[in-house]
Length: 262
Image (cartoon, rainbow, N blue to C red):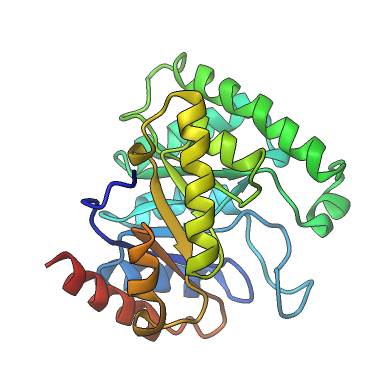
């Protein structure tokens, strides 16, 4: 059963593409001032749309800067590509950003998919199956390293797993995630929630422990908010890209959140 008592939260995926860092930083500050709950970037080396070799910044370096530049919002990658960093190193990076931010990091992670990143930076792309197997191996290593670091993290760092694969990704979410993030319309998301709940039953976990998150694309809360809410979504992510960084839609979702949580 989903925990219907969770409050609605709104996230912004501030995509680190097609803009100078100063503009990205100003947008992060504006989003925090507007009342957003979580500020995400993404973990890619090249833009995902627009000019394919356009401006793009590295994600975790940026999170360290955001940890100092913000004061209230949670921060994280939506999502970190497991292929790009040794799991023990990633755990140490997460612990460090957790401390810099005063306990506001969300460790978002996924198996990886964007082949241009792999090819240009010399990582082996492999197959979807090999990348998922690597993620399955990495998650316990990350958890183990987080338990050994000195100083320890300031809190149990929430783990967000992104992806909709029903046999493997959702099972990993049932085993390891505090948040699951997916994409699709309400019917698709409802189905994924059912699959995730089934995996939770198989591994002996209360599915209410996992916050359900979804990307909303360019949809307004009037179009999508209540429909996703009805199927259990509680964290809604709006995306914005440079160079314009229009936060109008984000503000609509924040206003809807406030009405929903009143």
